[in-house]
Image (tube, rainbow, N blue to C red; front, side, top):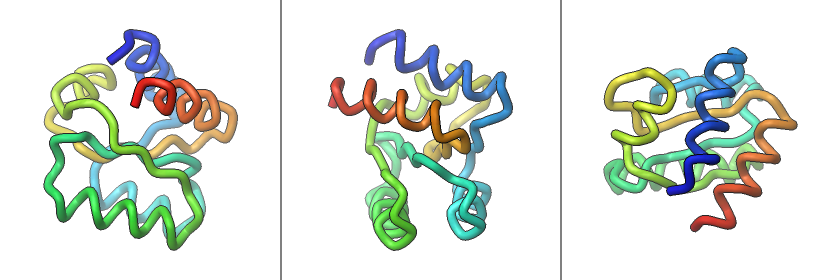
Length: 102
């Protein structure tokens, strides 16, 4: 995983434009606040399918990318598998960068 990707997640968190945790991200999707959802590769199959389906339903891009420990560490949280970017510009840049890596 490129350091640039983790830096962008960290930057999003510091800017207050990143949400973590399944319930928080699910709420953001329902409210229309999420612009991009990222699910860790080592999340359960149920979690991955749940957020891929929700992303499709709400028309929000969803990426399966990275391992939970690296992603969680980048944002200063512990054991997180689901993340949502709430800023359109950051979401577009992260989506583009992460898509190139997957």
